[in-house]
Image (cartoon, rainbow, N blue to C red; front, side):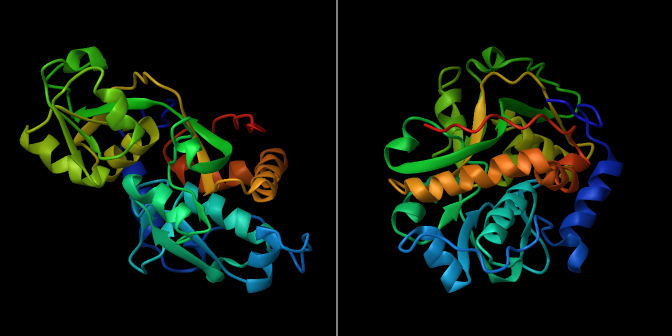
Length: 289
């Protein structure tokens, strides 16, 4: 993970993120592509239904700095929010007609299956288990699982192998929870990653584990307290979750993502959000499975 500010993210970066989450004027709102005027879609498709309704419900996380963080006005901001807004804009739906629903790792599939959301854009790793019940467009970003430790790394945690016999915190139902059990059976599972910071501060656990970009956001939001080990040990392709079998909608989203990769919209969305802390990466190749 290439950090603009190094492993111990600076107070300057913290100020940038806090400014982003605290602003309530138009500058803090998603700035994806302009809303398409009167787009046309084949009758009966999800695109046609959403476009005609003029609104969409998107699930995202509300506690993930840089990707999905709820601001004082109740609206989330971050890279995932930008991606959701981009898709809505191509359906002719403006940002103020998006209903954002908080989704945590454990409820993303049920929310999609039950129709509580039309999409989930929530640091959502594509994997074979999840693809059995939902479909994915993308990936739109590839992260890697890493470790967050106290500043100065007092327990000398350099890799997941150093966690043997030690306690680590992650989120219940996440890919990270499954992966880390290969290294330790002492796993404290909670509902959100922010709830892992207290146990790390108190020494109840020696590390928090999830994707490196999520950890970077947590370190940035709590400048001087934590650092990222920066030794990712997995590949985590982030996808956009949608209802199983909706091939037309998945193709539409993939087309939208690829267009944003080419025309610079994706890079602008990154630089406004996660790019305040992290270097701009190369977009991944969309999977047309």
